[in-house]
Image (cartoon, rainbow, N blue to C red; front, top):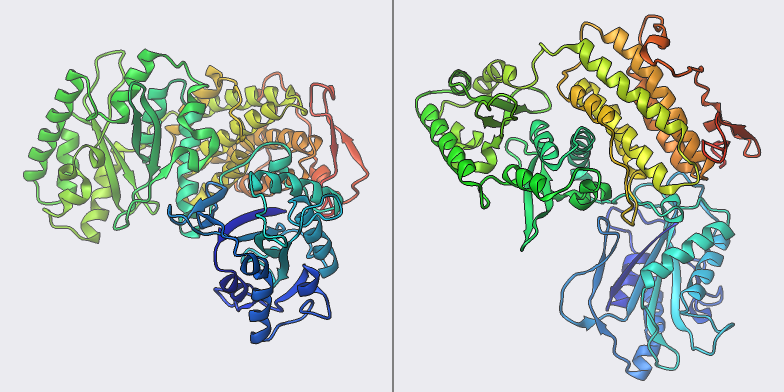
Amino acid sequence: MIPNIMRGGDIAGLVRYLFGPGRANEHTNQHIVAGSEDIAAEWAYGGRVLEQEEKRVVAKLLDQNRLEHGTQILGEVTRWDYEAERAVPVSKEKTPAHVWHCSLSLHPDEEPLSDETWAAIARDFIEGMEFDNRATTSKSPCQWIAVRHGFTKAGGDHIHIALVLVREDGTKANTWLDYKRSQKLCTALEEKYGLAVLESRKHNYASRGYKNEDNKELRLDLETAMRLAAGAASTESEYVEGLTRHGIEFRPRYAKGQGVVAYTVTKQEPGKRAIWIGGGRVARDLTLTRLRARWDDNPEERRKAADLWNPLKDPAPHTAAQACSLEEKIKTIAASVANESDFAQHLRASGLLVSVRLNDEASEAVSYSVATKPESGHKPTWYSMNRMSADVSLNALREHWWDNTLTRSSAVAIWKPAARTSDVDEARVWSEFGKTLTATITDIEHTDASDCVAIADTCGRASALFAGLANAYGPEHGRPFARASQVLGRRAQTKRAPTPRRYSPVFTSGLRALSSLARPRSRATWVSSQVMDSMERIVTGITRIQAAHGELTTARRTLKETQAALATLTAPEPRTDIGAWLPGVEYDPVDWSYVTRSDRSETHRVRGDSAQGFGEAPGLGEGS
């Protein structure tokens, strides 16, 4: 059950909304289920649809304490921020803020409650928040109502509580830390009324929520690329290079005397406005502070990364000269050609290293980066042309050429070899990735199911693996892997920053190799069978750990998305011998019954010592 709290100063307007049709005509059978007796009793206005005049009377009754005593409550009018998970001010000015509005929502998977149950929950909630607790204190009550008007857009049952923060004696109700208190209270009410416990709250982990569906796919793309880049990096500079390689544009944020302290990211699409999102807004565990805890973080590494974060922000002398030289060289090439194909061809022929990002349909280039060939034993320093100068961005250059859909698509064949090429040694890539899977399976089998931080760390590693497969299988076929990565990534996020384990060289090298691979071709059947066996073991281990930790809902969601992804790996031919693929790891046929069985009383022993391994895993049936 999720509480969302807002403040305002218009109780009549709130009542009109609660009893009105809704923004999308989604409100039905609007009625009061609980509240102050003179409003919510059956002989008053409770339990039925109200007439227009009755709604006005209800609003006046809610506001009568404030009007009688002349009590003023000034503050910031707020709305609920789904990203920050808190109420945020609509304006900084102090305005009337005596109206307290809270919605209590169930997950769409939960069965609707009766009016009687919602009434009991509302009364307990109001008493727990100390707005009407006459039974235990001498404080006068506030006037309040709980309104039920159908389901949320997502399909969850819910109620709204509307309350004026002035008590019968004219004193002001206390709202200090009301959000934290409401969260704690909801956990107690979930257990009391047999509701699904919000596991993120109970076990102290939480992913970033968001409301704008228009950005849903963008966030998925960003998180997938960022998790792969983070999993394949052992230093900050490698992470920044990974973001560039996967087509993610970024803006660093600086603090005086500290260098880069945060960053925002976007994935630019042709003809669309860039939407920038903070790294921590994408996922809590992808903030720069938490990522640095996994790397070899020292002043020298930060200096190297600083040149990559923004080569034009206090650059080293050689970096500034190199950037200016590249910009002039590109301008010269662009001025000498008439179309994008010629530009791409001349750019490659100039001796520069070129990396390009195509759109999801691979029908045109979106952005490009260049680098000079480094000295032997050194890595190239890449410069994103979209960030270096507006004059050399791809969109700006196209304004001077003959540009249309045909010329852009024709240029793809010239650009593409500079992106991920087909001459990658797939056998080596999948061999490296196989070692990563083997190490991950071993780590999972030794994960303590009672350690919240260890579970988050394990899920973070698995999330990076699925992100790697999403990248390897491309935009069309890799989408199920991206969604599975996102689900696992939610469990990798904790409200408090833990001390994470560093990724081992075996883990990072496998993901780094996978980053270089396009969609499997010649060995697709072999790859599918081997990877599916390994990923099934990883998913089995993680969902059993989650179940043993009491996270039944999380385990079911993890299973649902990962199974959908693994289904795309199903090979048409019999699987090959797993022994050669996973040396030293015993393979058992995967039994998914422990997450689908409806008998909640059954428990299933998982291989390993219960104190150090997976422990007991209760069934995860729909009734759990």
